[in-house]
Length: 521
Image (cartoon, rainbow, N blue to C red; front, side):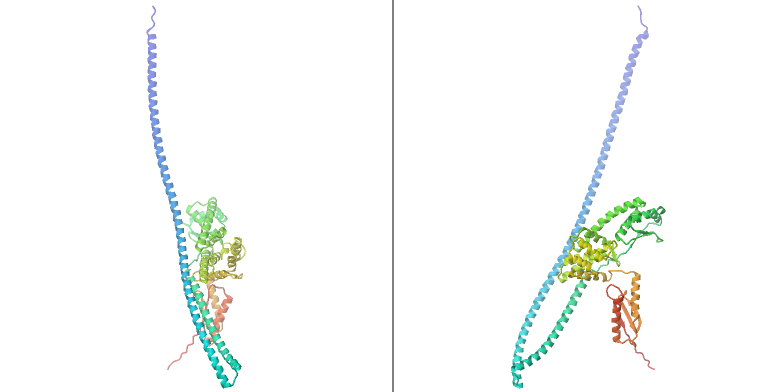
């Protein structure tokens, strides 16, 4: 019998054991992979939870920040609305006080009229009594004349009437003169009271710069960055803004020059942003100019609306509002034109209320009287005519248009409001502190005053004082008497009016001093 070798019996056993060991090894490896996978999944889940918590926390923080920002915006808008309501309330309070004052004045005038009526009744009674006495006297004189002179009643009456006519004419002339003098004095006092009160209530100072703006620099190195390589930055700036840039030896400063005040303001803001940011190149300049232009349009609109609200002038055309906003950056003789227009509007309203005229219409005409100065450098013609044309284009009332084009006397004023605007414009321009002249004009005025005075015969010395508002002339008492001094003052005043242009009034004073000297020996 054949027996297989032992190796054939052992081999299957070894194969089985090897398979079993392989299975156990694979099972172990699989368990390790499963454990590793479970650990990885747990780690991923943990990381995901942590990321979710972080995201949730960040979202909560962002939500809180957004809520805080919305709340701050709401509070800011609420504060602005509250401030506006307070301004309106303050304005209404002022109007209420004005109405109360007006009512009190009407009551005083009513009492005064009643007193005058009583005086007139008393005078009528006195006149009736006097007429009765005159009738009795006439009858008595008629009888006496007839008895003494043998005159007839007709002749005596004629003679008596002639005597009475002379007395009545003299008495009437005297009474008319007294009434005229009294009326003139009252009218002067009343006009002086109204104008003085208006000036005192509007004593502000609105002087500002004219055609240049100075932008400070942190150091002189910044000038080179502003100029750029081969001047490309400064050329791009001037082309974008339409403003001339002056870079001179002034330390740590550059000058922006332009006759258009709005462009100059835009250029100033853009230059300050460029200097603060430090990034200066043509693309950045154009971008900032575009953004600042948009912002400036909103500023002009808000400024115009605020001016209309302050003046109490509602329902203005949007283009008129825009022109009012431009006046904020316009000056005339150093006086801010928007503040000047508001001042004229206030003056017109106060004087119109005193005179019983339409105060709202007067304020509207006063606010718009210089509207042409907003674009007089762009449109040909006088600012009065330009303003009248724009007011006519935007359907303003004819009285307002006449006040605008007549406030410098080029066109004849046809309404009381136009005359008020002329007077208020002169008050605002001529009052102390309203306008500022350059040093050259100031010195020229002083020289002209002294030259006019020195051309008179008999003048020893002359001095222009009080900033050119007065000229004092010292004459030779041996050549000029008191009457000649009066004539000289009149002649100098007329020559100053004809040869010079000046705001307000110039006082001419002639001093004649005679000294007698002797010695006791």
